[in-house]
Every structure is written in structure tokens, then in C-alpha cells.
Length: 227
Image 1 (cartoon, rainbow, N blue to C red):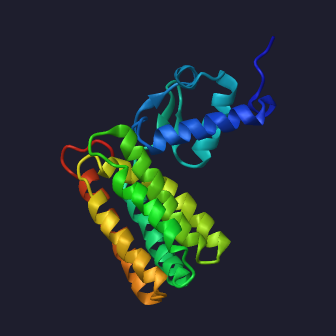
Image 2 (cartoon, rainbow, N blue to C red; image 1 turned 90 degrees about the horizontal axis):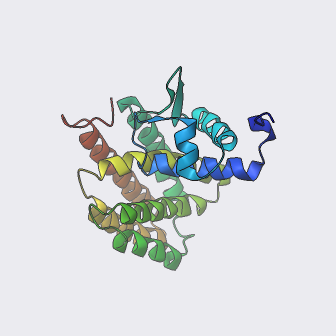
């Protein structure tokens, strides 16, 4: 019996594979530059080769993996250009989202997200890093959604996926979570008080500080994660 093509694979299995592999890459369980065969990925996920093949093709479209002849697949490296482009877009979109969200905020909901960011991280603990990054993404997406612009929020959501991988790499060399928690507190206060320009300024500085951390970590002489 012939192997089904990716188009014949049940969508649920393909989606499972996409979600699982995307998370493995974003959370750096699969490191930039790591080689990944369909057989290895199938074994890793406990899924057949067909949904994994379809998932890898999807992730290639997102730029997270690349097909390499006779080697299978390679997890895409994080380039300096990638960092500037991703954080550059965040610096354009997120301060404006915060400006528009000022005065429209469910401060208690943001505080609950911030509490996870503040308490969920322990340096050198992989699982707590993932908890922190998930909560940090949810916090920023929540602010974007409060802007009232759905397309803006969706763009921020996608950018946060990309920058989460960069932050995961950066946090390997420097714990900036305490600073980020302080910035979140200040942002919640400004948003709740309806201080639009103050909210935008705090958001801009938080995103810029995270960019500086990532650049410093990934351009260090002993870093092999970025080129």
C-alpha cells in the first residue's frame, strides 16, 4: 500500500505536527542549525511520516526550517537581520497598540498575566522558561487586542512567535525577566490610567530593551545560535 501524500493526511494530524514542531523550534528544544529528518521528527512526536512531512513543508513557508538536499531539514538559524526586522516591526506596531489600548484596559486580566510572567521563571529551568515566554506573549497580544484593531493584534501575535525564539536564546545568557516584570507593572498602570503617550513610551522601551538583550547574547563570541 502506498504512502499517502501530505494532501491526503487528515488535517488534525498535520496540525498536531505543525503545532508540536513549531513549539519545539520556538522554545529552542530544536536549536538553530540542528538537522532534522522526517524519521527522527516522526519518532520524536509519535506521529507518522506523512503528517510530519506536511508539517515541515508548512514550517518551511514560515521560515522556521529549510529543506537541504540529502540531509533532510535544518532548523533555520537566527540572523542579525532577522532580529532587526522582527523587533523593528514590533517597535512600529506595539507602541501604537499600547497607545490605542490606553483607557480600554482590563487591568485585572493583565495583572494575572503579569503574575505568571513574574513568578513562572527560574533561571536554568527549561520548563519555567517556556511558561514565562508563553505568558509574556499572552501579555503583549492582550495589549494589542485591546487596541481594537484585530489585524494589528494578529500581526503582533505572529511577531511574538518569532521573537519568543530569539528571547529564549537570549535568556540563556542573561535573565532580564525581573526588568520585564517591572516594565509590565508600569505599563499596566499607565494603560489603566488612560495615559496613551506614557503607555506607548513604556512599550517602546520594553521591546527595545529585549532587542538589545537578544543582540548582545547572540553576537557574543561563544554564541553559535546566530550568524
